[in-house]
Image (cartoon, rainbow, N blue to C red; front, side, top):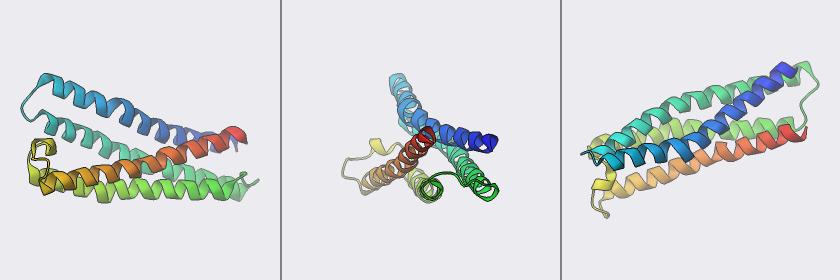
Length: 162
């Protein structure tokens, strides 16, 4: 049972920590370095680079969500059922749903729009509908990434209080 609990906890920590590292460290660093080089098309390159990293991290998120759900389920079946089993399961399902929507639906829309624009959205006029749509999609993506971040805190807190 301890191994299952540990595996679930590692999955939560990897998912939460990965989101934190990407949002607080990787994205700003990539854009800062590219901006500092003043390379033509640099922001588009930075966006493409971070998009690729985020796409790969989405797969990590799906795996982590699956590991958490499987370990919770096995622990419940083998007994004793984990305290707050329903809360942990629902929290994980919401986190996973947000990650799937962000990684499949929103990321696909952002990529299609980025290809249509052909340059960094920031290079477009501030009132260009494509730039506005990109900003809207980007804000939605950020909001959907906050769901697993907050859910991860809930799960980590739950583990610390058991």
